[in-house]
Length: 201
Image (cartoon, rainbow, N blue to C red; front, top):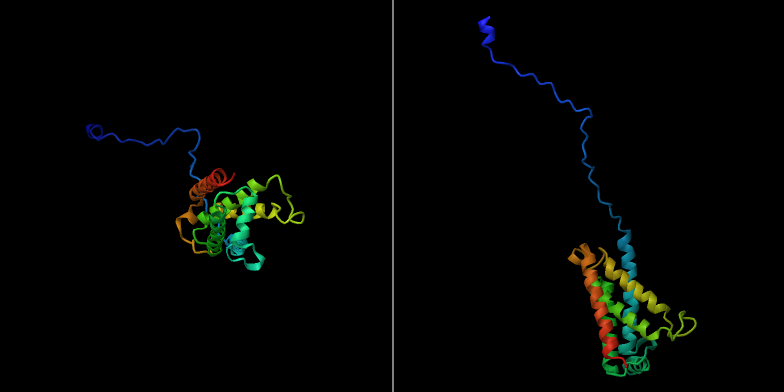
């Protein structure tokens, strides 16, 4: 009797008294959407179309190729739109930017910045043409239809980047395009303001 009383007390685990079983709130990990390369091919086509057209327009202005105006007549054309201050220098700058930035877009190199320069050109063109000219190219040679298309293409490349089939592949602005696109958009606005406020009368 004394021997049994001297034994240590045993603890009994009765479990928990929760009325509902515990459920896990861990959500399954989302898998990234696999890339099939279609978007990269689409961006490559867009780069060749937009960059190639700008490059050709730059060659027309600088070298007078393919029936282009050349520097002298380009300067006269700019003066007709109100750019009477330094119109020859502006004609050179316009042609060279179209040549260089167009080539960069085709190659997919520094694409957001190159596209920002091209977008600025088309924004200025729209500001000086609207509402004095026609919309459709069939109505007038200086209609704004092509300006809108090229400007939209440049803006798309500025935000979306060049894609993986480019010299920008692996660069930071292709992996994280939005911050760089915002900076380039600010650059575009700054260029437009400088040109419109200081060079146009």
